[in-house]
Length: 154
Image 1: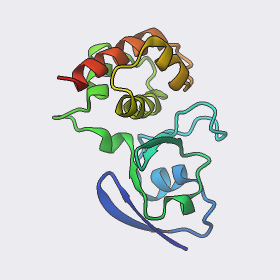
Image 2: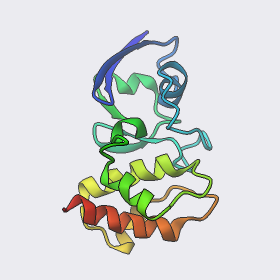
Image 3: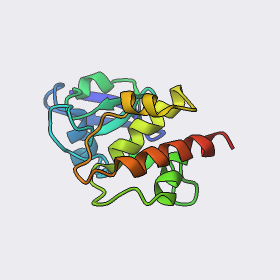
Image 4: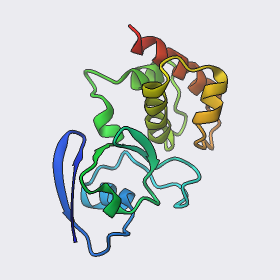
């Protein structure tokens, strides 16, 4: 089965045997975009978070068939080294990652939150950023989310 979509601003078509193949595996194994991580495979941890039509989704359980005609953004498409997204810049400024494995998912979830709510409260952050970080960098992430909100308004 052929599935066509845009990923990181570029048109893409992939051949898959089964339309229920998770989007995560297409992104990582077929398109070789390794920034989106596999964590739990049950949409619980958020390591696989990316954007589909502007919404943060857990790609480990999203069937590739759902991606047909959609716009997908992975961490590789969020910003660039020379022009980082405000979330990426804030993560750097606050030295958020420890091991770093879960951080792409957190950054994608944060970017989606800030697109909907450009000035979130701590309560907004707690209610919307529900990914799991085994290194427990939550305090630094909260500071970085507030900084990203500031950067987005500059």
